[in-house]
Length: 418
Image 1: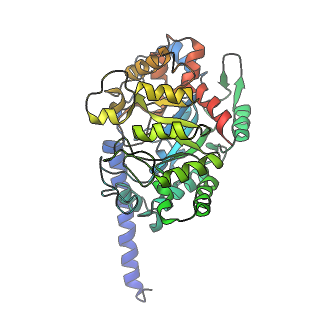
Image 2: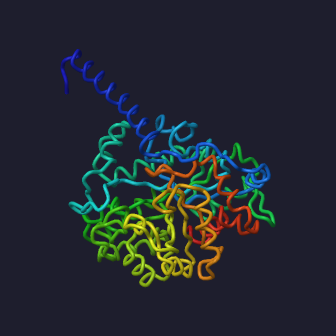
Image 3: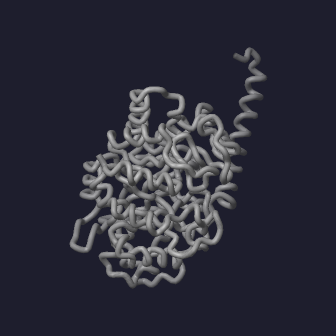
């Protein structure tokens, strides 16, 4: 404790200055380096497409928007000139359901894990202090994840965001905000209604299971995250961890013994397994070993053609993997960023979607959207301009278009949420 009022005042002023300047630095990074947008305006969209788009329920399986405060704890409810997504832009883009994914470690590619999941360098160690997050979140991935879940709950007030934890929550949200017609779910008031949100974890290293011994402790830790609102868990992010190999990892191994203990507990507690970022061996082992575990790929793509370079290959499923996930009843979110598409262009995303639809072993019921907005990527467009993708998909039958843009995601959660 400091006993000199003058010194306390100076230190307070210094800390306040650092936090304010830190927020400005994060804002600049967000706008210029972390989350740029290829097309800032929705060009080439016909009025008839806009009219159709306003009747859609758009559902996106992956956005990392909780990672950045943008104006404070409730900054997500304000419209911003930078980044990809916030409530006003989701509403403008007719987004009815958004999966908000929680990332806790952002390493350079192929970093080796240290001490059961610690990665150097980690951009989150910089972003959390600069944004004024509690010190417990700065270097502890579990606390970092739970803080983002807390922020989600604060904003899920039923006016801006609605928290979806159960099938009953989803049914109530749809009943209040959509008309269930023969064509599909039609929004009642798209410019003012709340956005339904499901919480997912991008990398289960954040559970910090390597510090636990018994299955009872693992069950308690999974329940802690379940109680915090998480319904989707990805085993890995961009590096191998103590649970499984990652597609960008240095070893790209399969599921570890600890990972199998987690998967069994996820099955027991009705959690959904997100196979995004998982290595080929991990995907195969999960599909073969856990037939009752709901699976999806929240964001990525499919390698219908030969991949150019290891970086592209790491974020693309093989055609056989995509077919196996579809056979299991899973859905695959097609991304909007260059590592998946080659270039961040709506036309290229539409082409990949159409190739999925044309494959009889994937088909129209298993294709979805997985933008990775606010995930430190160059996005084809921001959340208010999903109509650009609708324009590129206008030649599809209307029912198929509605399924891809959101219907498949709604049915998946209606079936697999607890």
